[in-house]
Image 1 (cartoon, rainbow, N blue to C red):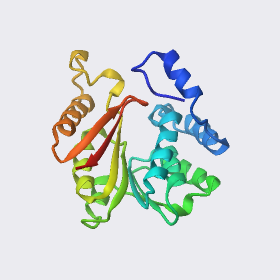
Image 2: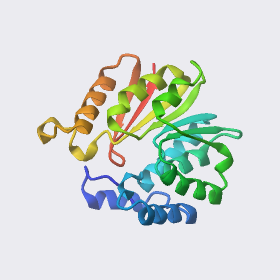
Image 3: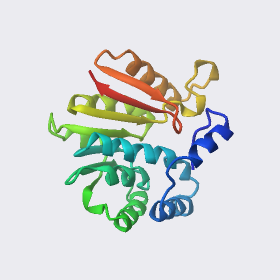
Image 4: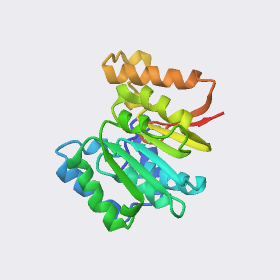
Length: 219
């Protein structure tokens, strides 16, 4: 499953077919999400993005990760699998119903003991973190109008090699000015993309995987 609509779909299919495929637990989580979220399954990250996140987590030897927006837990599962020995993932979400699906599958995957789930507004959870908890990896995939605030809370807490991943930054092409879209989410994403692109505190690249993933590190 891929959410990339910004590239020719035959190329998307070619790339997806030559990426590591989801295992039985991941396939079960995809199916459960489709069945139990009543049409919201499109909020789940693509399987190609999940592989990328596991690889990146492993390469960075992540000891502490933070996820803003967990939904049914596919991205959390992918991050948790790549954590260094003893590593922890803090998940921030407001839905007991949808994260319960994730918890069931984290147990099946044997990673539940690595994940701390906080059911509360993410901005409150982030602000309650110590000033320097040394976040090695952060993934932002929640309400788009909150992206800027999440970014500003996480950035100063990054470890020297820490990375922030931000989802949906292509937004199916709607972020392009000539799309004409002026809804709050699109406007917020345009502002976020412009802010990060001009932010002299960081280096950033907007990857065309999935629906756009911006990768950010502090200078």
